[in-house]
Length: 235
Image (cartoon, rainbow, N blue to C red; front, side):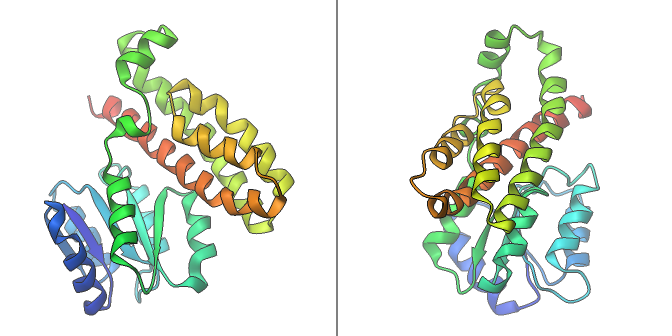
């Protein structure tokens, strides 16, 4: 199930029309509280697509409420935003937002973001068995090790967002250097590739432009490891 959250019925309908060919159940919620009610109903949710500007409970608060509840903490979230709110969403990437769609959105951009968020975990991290063999872990050590890596990625994400907001290319490059080590532990090749692009950027402006992609890939890696850790917690 994909849950679309927006106080504007037209926006909800347009998004549902774009996604109806994706062979997934679509549910709608007109507010943050209604979205939480749907999520708490127990229906498995693969993705939440939420507008950032809503009365009563905006996208930022909805995300915070989801992340504070173990039942919804690992559900991927994509924010729908205006150009003016893009910096806000970049800031939220450090809190677990997978990406954003800018209004007025294009169908191709929506599908690209959604498919990336729903992609198999193996696109983000290598197969569990390969990681266990490579790192010589015991079967029961894998999930706790992933959980212990999440706070490291949290700190890097926070620093990355701060560097992007300050447009500090030097700090951004320093953070990109630090991403490779935790990403390599779990075969996070997309995050490593994004970090390399920042490091190899010809100019500070190019590095800052590529920093948003690094933030997204780092968020993807963090989310994947958080889900791995959550499986350990449940069982």
